[in-house]
Length: 129
Image 1 (tube, rainbow, N blue to C red):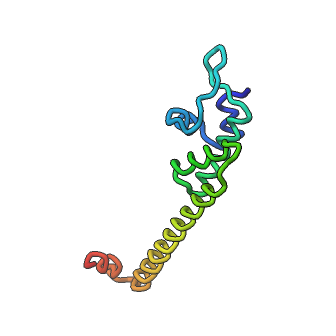
Image 2 (cartoon, one colour):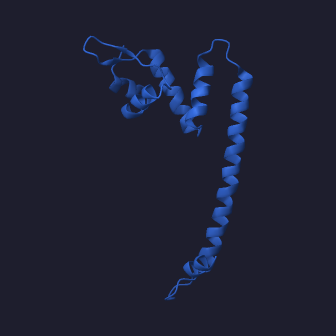
Image 3 (cartoon, rainbow, N blue to C red):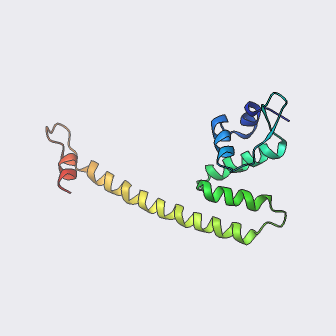
């Protein structure tokens, strides 16, 4: 059993985020020592690590919670995990396409810039759009 600071170090999840996850019931509340300090098990740290990894992969918190719940089910539903991941991939691909359009638009605006002008062509064009 370890304290919250050590659980934070081992999982890579900040102390405040751990407390938030507990308040929002994303992870179960840990046991308490006689002095009322939180005590975490290896399983608790494992849950936090998995949540961190899922969040690092861009899963929204609700989906990360669903995947965490699926991971804790002994007969976890691989098909449900796959479906969530496929939806997430589609969302990532959409965001990438949107970012590429943004990149193209910004490059086009920058290409219209010329040094030494008092009026910036880029800002002028943005004002008229």
